[in-house]
Image (cartoon, rainbow over all chains, first blue to last red; front, top):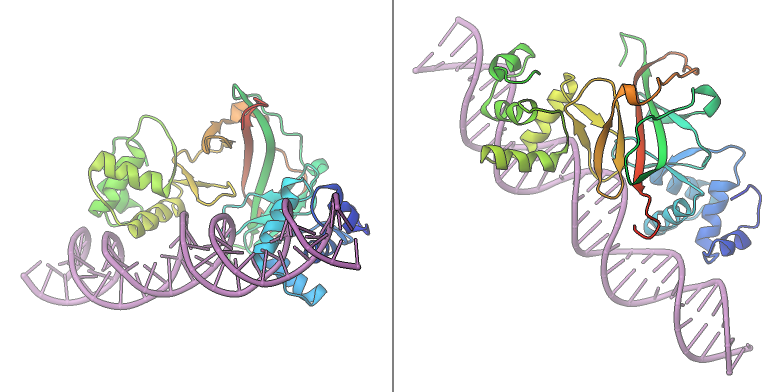
Length: 142
Length: 142
DNA sequence: TCAATAGTTTAGAATAATTATAATGTAAGG
DNA sequence: CCTTACATTATAATTATTCTAAACTATTGA
């Protein structure tokens, strides 16, 4: 999904009815200057702030999963209590700040290519995710 | 924690009272031919099968977290509904089979070294985890 | 334009993993 | 042994997520 687009048409193009809720979620997710990371609760808060509207939790979950399924969102693995999503769907990796619980992109030019020599017979690789956990290096803090 | 050891002494050495439950959990986790991956419910089942005993869920959680904190278990990030743990605490990575929901080790010699050029000021790297998601490459299956 | 219908939204219930609680039990040290 | 600090336990609480079934709405074709 590109920036500043007619989400009504875009949604129809990918087989989703352009409901009021989905259009608003698109605006919040894809009409931004930069890509960003969010949890479902972040998104609910953003919708309420930017759109002064409450969309039911179930719809937010449904819509986020529909967008993920179609490749417009990426889910990021952080064994945590909640799921993180990324509006940047290009191949890249992440730093996870264990102090602030925030994600930071690690673009491909910032990491050497990942080359896996092993392969699992009968299986194809769906994705390769690198997660770099960081924390304050101040020994007196924590 | 090594194999075939006196877990009573080992536990005491790391500041944990060698209770009956902890010793049994050690035996199930560390008295094995090979390292392995497990979820909490896998472990509960294993204890009941191998030890014919029921240890309360809370104790299993507490003990697993105590061992993780002390570096005898590693937690693996798979954005999933449950947490996976690994008795192999050396630096290595994982394949995750999305069909069977099982983990497969990817040892360091099976992957080129991960070299991160970017660094986050004021933060030190705690860990680098690579997760390779695989699934059947049979287009007719799924 | 409008009615039929297939897909959506919703509140609230259900589920499931994990953590908290508070009472009971037990290892360690004198 | 007795005390006490630490552990275990059953159960309740919490939290993220999914399910359900009723109400709603976009689409389509008459």
